[in-house]
Image (cartoon, rainbow, N blue to C red):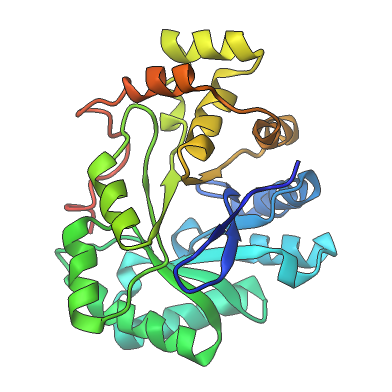
Length: 274
């Protein structure tokens, strides 16, 4: 089951399907990541705000997998935004991860009320230029936030990680990302479990002999999105990775497209998260 690769706008490649550790306790992080790596995941997503970067670092070391075969993402926390602050925060994350470089470093939220994301972006550009970070991107950025980065630095993020699932498909933002060759990556791809009773999704699951969650994860992949999923249960991690074994058809995709809803958001609104 090869994990498809996506080419970023800086020419680097990353796996389309990843494993994340949001809300995973520190003591459970290393075992979960080790299981994910054993299963075949090669994109690992963490963040300073998750409080578990050290567990990810331990798992990478324990796996025995060459570092160059793993794509590691972490993120700058809102409280650490700014140029000097961002550089110091990366130093801390770098130490906790205990690695030679980070493949992708993201600004976790624009936090517009702080209005420091452009200065933070300049710090990320410096880290990329120094080689400590291979690629740089953002998370939860709107077209207006992205446009400010373009206008004030001339540097386009390689990726924008946003809340995205069948009930909240973010079509306009995805179109903006695509126009600028920014990969859109989905967080909370299962809508935090609120799609499990959806009759459309369950009908498609029965048709393919799959679980509702597998159908939704496959929808992300078949939509050309990168997606990060999470579990601490070994059997569920294996089940999630098995979405690479099948594809949805055109009728499935059309039915899922119709689930988009204006009130579908389940996470924080980037305009107000500080």
